[in-house]
Image (cartoon, rainbow, N blue to C red):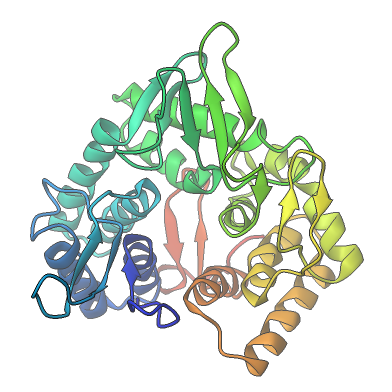
Length: 343
């Protein structure tokens, strides 16, 4: 997946991870293989078994006598991408009965535990956004709620019950999602402070804004199995987002999650797509359809960029019954069953 809107024509590990997932949903094994090979060769120096993929790759400008070239622009991995890659591999191994995928997915998941999680006081084992840069002081961590899709965390905890770290990650992820939205809107980033009174606090760098990262939180919640224990509390927690979208006809682009005040701009086509499964899960079928129609109208006026395309693929694929997540987080694509995705 290339983001053609950027001068460097970048691709990010997140995009490769999502593409692997979509290839599995489409039962397109040749594309899955090509995506996996490209990711391993270009983002992990040819060895995903020992290296987590770099998060961004693209065009490098000519400098110091060296010509323009293509390659990794930042070697730091991104844990959300790593989780999605591991998940796609594990589910591909199960659905396509390919042990190689299962083995590689298991190894990548183990690397996530070792390199991208930490024991936070009062919270337990928690997913960090990456190995470097998110623990700026001994008692401060920066976390991202959109990096912990509950269905993925539950799947890992189900697959490896003998490894309590995964159950701990599921528990801390639930708190990260539920305890950081006091006004019903998820923030892009949040701080966690240790010390005498450990707990979540508004992120200072982003001023507790909820925008382009956080929009995925509503998408993940809307696609949870009706039998997932986290579904009901998450749908209830984020109800203000649904109420605003229904009242205004569109989701907000930016929200101050401390006060609940909404910025002046409406969310783009991808935002409308992302909230549609959430509205459907609440029983607001008409409102969900109106957001799908808004997304299609905006897409007809201007081609969607990379991120909006991804959000639309997730949302419409789920709404159209092309896949669903089970109560244990397992993926059920339509090509393996006749029943449509449950909302």
